[in-house]
Structure formats: structure tokens, C-alpha cells
Length: 381
Image 1: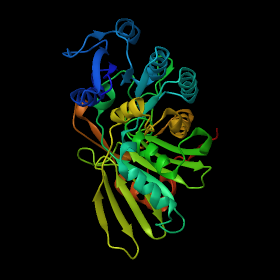
Image 2: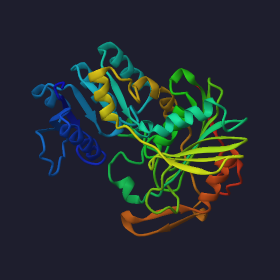
Image 3: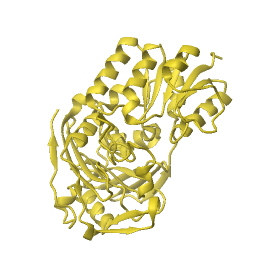
Image 4: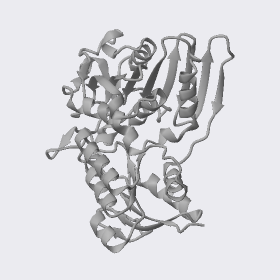
């Protein structure tokens, strides 16, 4: 058995807890050892020595791998520092807050020869492979496209949890929050993966139509379409202002004249609805990204989400963050409920509007959504 990988975890709260759970699973298998953590406000965490900065932790603990679950605006600097200390990196999504930072990080990975795995967990689902085969084999017939959608609900507390939440820029620095780039970013990344358009040079243009019902600076409802060099349209309709209870699984689908094959990626379920075939749903497996990164280190296994294959997503991020500010939804079309941090908005008819956008492959402004009063903005690399 190989020596356990020495891991430093950056961020022990929020999504960092999921990283810690994955590390604990690998520790139980003798494949990893948590040697230190970094968090200026660690709370009750006492599983390993805690430091205020990654530099301090690296000075005291040689690391084979640094796992990063920090604010988006800090991703690039932390990842570069880890790479320059000879560590591989598991980096929470989105990889960086800008396309320029992404290129800097990509250069650092190439220069150091270290691996960077990006935390788009949905890409560990076997359902991605299934949909890729469905598209390649033409099972949905002509006029094939890949479309993703998600209908979540977020209250005011979601945006008050961190100073940078709900902002494009905070304290003069890009932080790149938004429904497209953060909570439902997995849907966009999964759609690009299914289409086979994951690298930056495979993006010809990005159209984005952005809205907000919350009192924030960034988008909480959005339509995105990506023009790709592979010739397959990639589209996404997303909202955090739905009536949904909990977080129903977002979906990515291959759609064509014969029907659709849909992956509900948080449930790892694939639903087949094709003309002339019985409808069916199958459960699929998923591989963890940390386990895959350790396989890469130990046996040379291909990474599930290598940094370079998030370049197309970073084009979408750049498009959404440089587009005109999201259009506020007219309050006449929004119902609020709850008090304080539990206050939550619902855009009237959002489920029907989102459904029409998905079925027709058109933005909200072109499917008669009465609150959709802007038009898509095109970004070109």
C-alpha cells in the first residue's frame, strides 16, 4: 500500500465540511492523512492543527495535497501557493473568480507539473458518460441540444452568511457570486461536459440573460446559452427564486426530435423518454473527486475534472460577470414570505416560465415570461 497522502484542508466550515468528510473516508481506507487545516474562524474544529493562513500551515506541515473550500475570490492565490509548494490541489468550484486568474492558475499548474482537480462533483456521476454516449450515438434524433435547469429557493440568510455573498465585486476584488457561477454552477458544467465542450478554445460565444429578485448585486435567476465549436447548443435555465421545498435535483438533458434522456445529478438518476421506447429510470453510480485525485496520484488515473477542462465554464463565468448588471424583477411579479434572514422570494410563474425556456430552447424574454424585460447579452472570447 502506498503512503497516505498528507492533506491540508483550507476552510473547515460551510462546504469545507464536505471536504473534511471525504478526507475522513480516505483516512479510514489508509489513503490519506489530514495533517493541518486553515481557517481564521475554525469554531469547534479540533481534528488537526489549525492555522490562519495556508503559508503558515505549509511552513509547518509538508503536504502532498491541499484541499480548498474558501471564498471564491481567494481560490487562485491559494491554489497557486499550494502548487508552488509541490502539492496537488482539490479546488472547490468555481476554480477562480475571473478568466484572467484561471489562466494564471493554469500556467502555474503546467509550470509545476502538479494536478488540479476542480470540485464539480456532478462530473463524477456515471450519468455524464451515459448522456455523452446518447448524444454521440444520436439516440434523441435530430436537432439535438444539451440543456440544464435548476429550481432552488434561497432566503435572505443565504446572502447574509458571508460578506462577499451576493456580489460580483467585493472590496474592489472580483468574487463572482451568482446562480450561474456558484450554487447551480454544477448544472452549467455538467451540460458543457455532456456536449464535449469543456475547454476554453471550444467556446465561440456566450449569451446570458440575468435577473435578480433579491436585493443583491448579482444574478439569482438566469438564462445562459453557449455557442460551441462542437456544434451542439448548450443551454441553462436557472433560478434561486422558485417555490421548491428543499433542493430538488437540478437536471441536465440531451434533447432532440425523438425525446430526451435526463440526468438528475444530485440524485444520480437517469430518466429515458424516447419515442417508441418504454419510459424508464435507472440509478447510476458516482465516484468521489478526492478518491479520483488520489487514484491519479497513485496510479496515473485520468482526472475527472482537470483544471484545463473547466475553461469553457470559466468563459461562462466571465460572460455572466461582465454582462450588464442583472435586471431587477418588478416587485409586482415577486411574492415574499417569512421574516428576517428567513425571508424568501418567489417569482410568479417561474416554474412554468423555466419549463417553457427549457422546452423551447429560448431565453425567458422570448417565452412570454412577463417579468423578463431584458434581452440576452453576447460575450465573445
